Length: 514
Image (cartoon, rainbow, N blue to C red; front, top):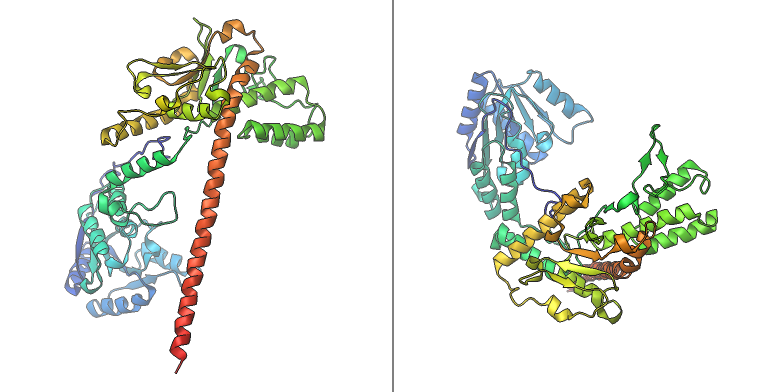
């Protein structure tokens, strides 16, 4: 959601009062340092954690601690203990009955003991960065200075593990979790967001450049990538075309005379639960085709559709068309009577692709589209009149549109802003609250004056149904292609796996020959 721009990334960096950053040490394994660390903590009446990556290493660590501190009270916690034993041991340690808790990573989450302010991590090169960060977070949970020791063995350290440990040494300030995550992303790679690979090339080119390259490739691959509009805000006079529920004084849904609420009449579907289920199904319909299918099912099951329900179904068809065309707000301009339909994510390339699939390569007569100058790469706003054939190549090609990073960054910012506008559209009460001239928009001129009240939804559907159908069909084709591609990829992987197994079997047979 953050990458798409629907939500911003928020980072909490303010620590609780009186907390201090944990002092971190990254060094090769040293018994002397372990002795000093535990001795200092016990001298100030504290407790310690000692963490190893494997259960099999607990015995070795226990012998080491007993040799250094013969009288040290040690208790263990790991994942193979009988049910409840690990929790009981941690509770006994929290009560102060033991000096040191020897454990595996079972303590990385959910353990909060303010008296423990020293943690020793053995073989730290074997842990992932998130685990190391979580383990360090087990100490320093009071106003007492905490210490964390990351001991590693040089014989087993790799380039990536060295980078992880260096990051833990560098990023030790309070609230550095997001920085740790970013560093981990750079080290391991971002992965293939549109595929099955679990690691990417971010480490080679840097995170910022990698994300720009990824966005650029996605934009080039996508066709009708209109932003998703979860809910369109219809502001026509008298509540016409609205599907908002209206409640009476008893907090019950009511059917308004002008159709400002969608409600299946009780006389049509008598069972309350069944009626509620059917209402939800039509509200969640993703296309007008799906609405038609549901309506046909109703006719067979419950009989002919009453007039009141037909009007409400038209409103639902309208909302479906609006969402598919990326329209988040629709209303009448009181001065001109024009019906304005704002579509923040609509771009000339989208409209060109839609028109190319319509009869005569033109939008329905009466439906105009206006693009502000910054979107059409022209000095003035570009208006495309409905019913007239347009030059698709001229609309699709922008001579100044190249690989310049600043232009791609500008496009990213526009997409983010579009998603922000869409997410806040439901709060708009009047069309005059927004500067519609700043956004791409569809226009039906003189709708408020030439079309009488009660017939405006029908007029809108006549011009919006054809382009919305094109968008839906294109998106369905893309989904089908993606599904086929995924199936082919799985088959290739299966064939490759079977081939490797066959080769292994053949090599074994050859080895058995004398």
